[in-house]
Amino acid sequence: MELLETQDPEKKRLIETSDRHKHEIQKEVQALSDKTEQVVKNALIIGGTLAITYLLISQLGSSKKKNNKSKSKVAEEDPEAIENIQPATPPSFMSKLGERFVSSATVILLDIAKDKLAEYLSNRKTKV
Image (tube, rainbow, N blue to C red; front, side):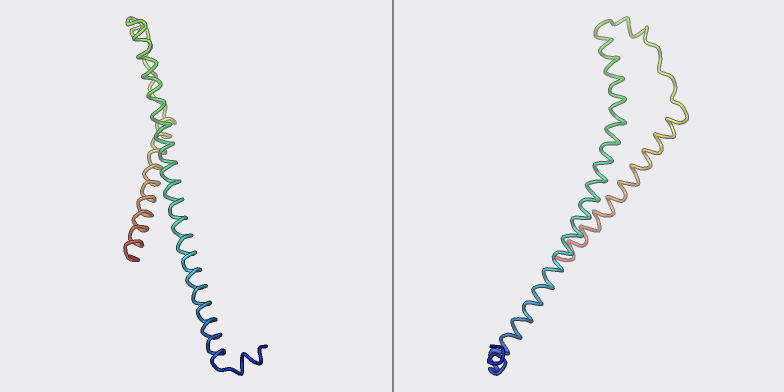
């Protein structure tokens, strides 16, 4: 059958054209797949950074809220009990160091997320 196909120049030209189009479509699909993969990676990095930042901030914020809530509940039950509550001990050196570390890590992660988001938006803008 191939012998007949190669003898007819029109069929041979059409087969070559078909193969060329097939390879071009495969290249386009591969390029699209690579772009999609990069966008997904960027989205995961940005989303992960935001999620970690949110968790860190919510953990730091929740300890302060719990302490304030417990004092307000005691105040509602017995207004004189506030006077009996002992003042909180000053934070230790390690807790201050931990807070600074967490805030520094948060700033770094937000900076990375900002850079990735800016890179994504600039890539998107140049493609359009």
